[in-house]
Structure formats: C-alpha cells, structure tokens
Image 1 (tube, helix red, strand yellow):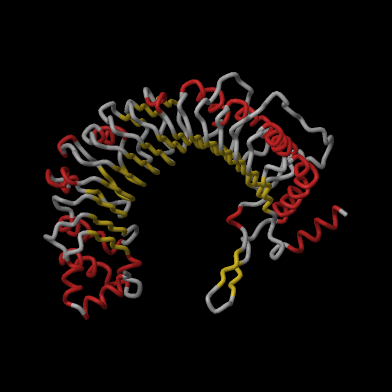
Image 2 (spheres, one colour; image 1 turned 120 degrees about the vertical axis):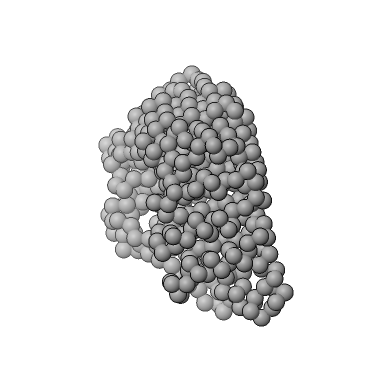
Length: 445
C-alpha cells in the first residue's frame, strides 16, 4: 500500500493504525514519505521509527542518499531501530556518513542475516565481534579497506553471499578459508583492486568486472558452476585457461571491449551448457568463436552480443564473398543461438553459417539487427485505444548497417537454415525508420 494511502487508512481506522505500528518491516524513502513537502522528511521518519520503537523490527530499509538535511538525525534513528531481533538492514546513506560499529551489539550480531550498506564509510574492527547469523553482505560505494573487510569476513562464518560494488579502497581482496558456506561472490567496478585470493572452498558463482593482476580461486576452481568476467582479452583468457582449471563450469558470461582472436585448442568445456559473450571490438574476427563451439560439446544455449556504434569490420558485400568453413565440427546438443546487433560483417556471417551446418540439434536461431529493447511498442488499453511509443533515437550509420545486416541474412543465411530450425529475424522498426529503409532499398535496387 502506498504511504499516503496507509496514512489515510490509519486516520480512519484505529485497528489499522495499531496493526501498522506493529508491522515489523519498514522501507523508508523520500519518494514514499515526502513526495510534496521537502521539509517534512526528517520529522516523518522520526515519528515512524519512534512509533515502531520496542516492537522488534525484523527489517529496516532506509534509503536517503544525498538527503543532507537528514544527516544529523541518522545516528538517533538507527539507535531506535537497530535492536536485537533485526534480521535485515539496508542503508543507503551519505558518502560522508560513518556507520557506527557500536550499533552491532551482541543481540544484533546474533539476529542479523542480511546487511547492505551504500554510500558511507564502514570501519569494522575485531572488537565488533562475530556476526553469527549473517548470510548476505552487500557493500556499494562504501569506504572500507581490504584488511578491514577481511577482518569482518573472518567473523562472519555463516556468510553465503558477498557483493562488492565500487569499493575503491580495496586493493587486495582475501576470502578466508573459514567461509565454508560462501557460494556467491560478485566484484563490480572496484577499479583499484589488483589481487583476489579466494580460499573459500564452496564458491560456485563468481562475477568479476574490473582490472586485476592476480586472480586465485583456490579449490573453488574445481567446483565453479557459474562464472562472469568483464575485462580486456577475457575471451582469449577463457579459451586458453578456463577449460583446464574449471572442469565443472556450466554457465559462462564474458564481456570485453578489447580482444584478440580466439585460438583453436584441444582443451574442452565438458560441462558448459550456457554461454553468453558480449564483444564490443572493431577488429575482432567473429569466426574465431567457432573455437567455443568445438570446445563445448554439451553447449545448449549460446547468446552473442556484438554491439558497436559504427560497423568497422569487412562487410560481406565488399571484396570476396567466399566463406570460410570448418566441416569437421559436428555439434549434437546446441538448441538455441541468439546474435544481437547482427551486421553484414563477413566474419559474423561465416560464424552463423558454420553454426547452422555444424549444430545438428539446433531448434532456434534469432538474429537481432538492433538491441531488442530499443524498439517501439504498442500498448492496448481496455477502452480500445492504443498508445504508440517511438523507437529510441539511432544514428544513421547504425540504421544503415542494420538494414545491410537484414540483406546479408536474406542473401547468405536463409538458404542455409534447415527446415527443423526456426529462424527469427528482428529488423529495424518499419514504422519509425521508413526513411532509412526506403533509402537503403533504393540503394540495393
């Protein structure tokens, strides 16, 4: 129920008011509390928290980023709300605010299970003591060093989920072996991070976005199921290293803006079923990705995103139309392939044709010449009227290449599609891009 509606109901019903004051889960945001009167925000939060004082809150979500007028009151609010019995604490505060470790009393440390901090400073020490029930920790834009985090992790033995985003004071991240239950680790945009050393044996889901000079996953390499890597030359790294050190990998996500061509190697991903590759590079040979097709005999789904602002690859309509082939590859498990921002790049057409000829079990091939979420939509309402939303603005060069991609599909790919494969071609919107389409069709004629 929206806050305004809850307030009106409370005024009319004493039973509702009593029930609301006993509600153990609170989410307090500027949008919910103070959509009209800016000056009332602090007093409303103060009243709500004091009305709930003593009832034993199970969850508090306080989202007040950049609300400078509330800064002096945060300490008193947290003193009222964070009591023994609380299980989930989410605080979006101010970058200058220092979270008081004194709030983590013995009773709070016993009960809290999920702890999320954003935009503040957190300096935990050994004196804080163990968080015995903590299973999920998420830190975003938080001032904390690697040593301070390691100290906190060493006292959170029940931890299962660790998420670090834009924590720029962390240079070395050490995950102690005492975290026997840790299964999920995400590190995003910690740009000064150089070293990751993991000794948690049960880590099975790991995502890393950023730069690093040393990555050691320890025993978890053998049990890793889901891996996501976002960095330069990560496709080459994955093909050259991961197949041998992560034999049980099932899902792999790779993103790169700078890449070298992928080599053909004898190593295999014997358990890989789901592969997503985002490669936004103007010089990459897409055909070299057949190395993953050859290396992943149990691959079922393959998603490829080749987005670029201007197509700089050699077009299939330029130079020789001879297509490279690898007839010795035969894949018996691949069922679905999707290529986003499909273009007329010759190496991409070659890759697609190779997939069609090699994947005998293929059922679905989707070729999207633009990002699907950039297209317009039409919503129908009960009164029979429709609201049309226009496509996102696109450059002339991007639209031109999208239509060239459609032409490449018609000329080189459609004839190669077996009758057992459903081909879906997502073209530029004819309603919003008729001028470009007419110009392109005229040029072809």
